[in-house]
Length: 103
Image 1 (cartoon, rainbow, N blue to C red):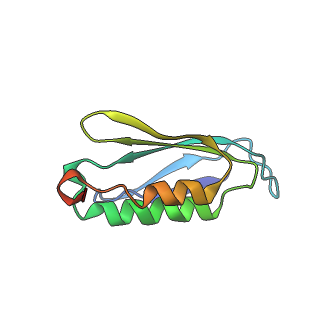
Image 2: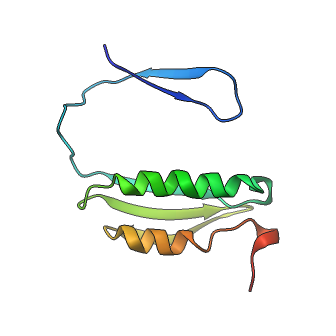
């Protein structure tokens, strides 16, 4: 059995999940909602969150569908389903914790 392991932020240890039903070399299109925490509690962690989403977007299949939701005190749909990764990147540039937002 194959396993996916990744460290979990500030928590100790590594969590492991079994990989089921993945075929090597297959990159089937998926629909993914990127839900981004832009609350004040993110503070300096927001840069790491941006980097994580950017790394994920680098692996996107051209046929993947993406949408972007931002939340702090409430959730807001910032971008409906799109296949344009650059559109998601552009919207991500404006996601900041409330105290850092410039109007």
